[in-house]
Length: 337
Ligand code: BYC
Image (cartoon, rainbow, N blue to C red; front, top):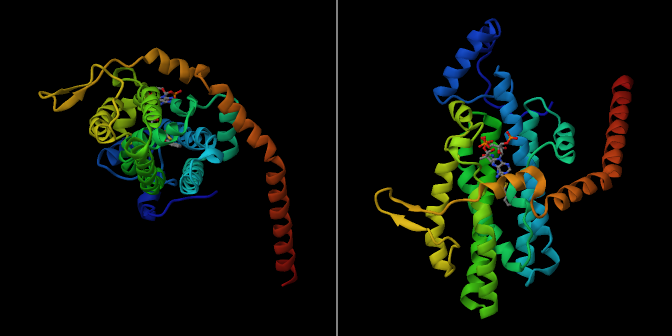
């Protein structure tokens, strides 16, 4: 199986661990992650830790792949050749992120086919944010500024996730997400500074529509987060859903000022005592509706992924046939030698 493992524990340490019982292994594992230790694919780990990671990493991979769809909608309509090239590069990056993440999840013993089957049957989740439509060109800039901005906020702490292959994948992903966020901001700034009144209104409308769904990206409030506390104990999540959401709001207020757009929240107010921006109530019923499959584009997104998978069957078959031919040829050469 493909592995991203690099810094495996010394062999005597591994053998000692294999000789111990489950309870003792678990205690050692807990102490290891509590002390900030990394976990590599071949290390012993509790089943629940493995399952949590497969769930989170595969959902993350699916989000990257499904996340290409709302942007793909604008490739043929980008306003300039430069913007089109940037958009194509960004979408290609998202495909790459999906692949690093599927590879990281595979190191936990779940095959890519199993993960994709779970996505295509509607069993696996992907980020709620990609179930919203991209109605105008300003949506593309807003996705870069806010969606990628939220993604970076969430993903930078994941570079310190206890599961090392996930953490390593996140380093490169975060660098690329930074470029994505900046290109989005730059595209909106151009429209706000050099654009017509109509273009400025288009930006404001896009920000109005994306702001609240972006705050939902961080997941339910900490009190309702099913996995949050356990994932924090295991060093999978280093910062809670609510803390990340707050950091995101704090960062966006200033950026919105520079852009000259208004964030659609009348309750947004600086709180001196907290040292943070207070913000209004999030409509969690909308979040759960979207997560439950009833957002504006859930059906369309899933149908597009299933179609791409079905249409690609001949490529997978041809690649497999080619690999079998190569293997047979290599075996023959070996026999002859
Ligand atoms: N959407 O216990 P909780 C990108 C689910 S890609 C849907 O707090 P956890 C980009 C959650 O799965 C962005 N479902 O969960 C790509 C759980 O349900 P299950 C993707 C959500 O895992 C292309 C339940 O709610 N980023 O930015 O501790 C172009 C309870 O939640 C959502 C990642 O995936 C949601 N927003 O915390 C542009 C980052 N939130 O699984 C940009 C990695 C929660 O029990 N993932 N749920 O059925 C994480 O950091 C965590 O998984 C989350 C949730 C913070 C998302």
